[in-house]
Amino acid sequence: MIVKVLYVEDEIFLAKIVKETLESRGFEVFMESSGGKAMSLFKQCKPDICVLDIMLPDKDGFAIADEIRNINVDVPIIFLTAKTQTEDVVKGFTIGCNDYIRKPFSMEELIIRIQNLLRIKNEPSGKVNNDVVKLGKYTFHLNRQVLNGDGEDRKLSFRESELLKLLYENRVRIIDRREILNLLWGSDSFFNSRTLDVYITKLRSYLKNDSSLEIITIKGIGYRFITG
Image (cartoon, one colour):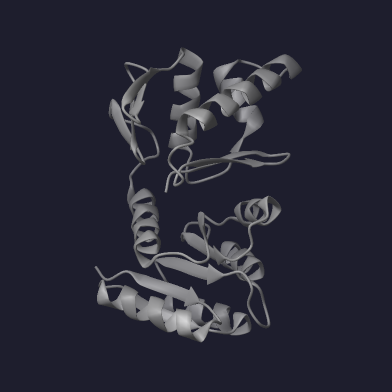
């Protein structure tokens, strides 16, 4: 099946390169340079995935993504952005994007992220059914509670292992802090909440050597696990 990509970008030179490269890999690309015309093309082509620049004329990528989510909650959305502020990334995930790539980017990175989101979308369940999960350059052995990578086997505690598993299983969405606390600690008390912060910091430090992996805090809501 040919994958249909809605691509909205106003930098014409970049847009031409991206479109031609994706088409050379077998994707069908529907391209638009105006944010104001993007929704019309979305409804017309019914894409399998959307790649949206944030800074666009007429209507920005955030507004387009918000409109898309009112119509379709499942289609994956990737933001392309020159913005590096954390609040912009958080805003994108709060609206409902699935991933973001900072400019400048390589075409291989974009293609891998597209393929990854389509694979996640087509998985029958988010639940982990295997003992071994690949996380970027790391291998997570669930039953052994071991994270392998960087030439070492890191033994995780029970809670570290369960938290990493929970974040991985819910990587397609923002997972609420209270949901994590109630599932892993049995209550969302202040003490348990501070403990969760400590565990999140630990997991971030364990995964820090792979830039494709990121646990993003969505302030006032929860977390989003990006697996690259």
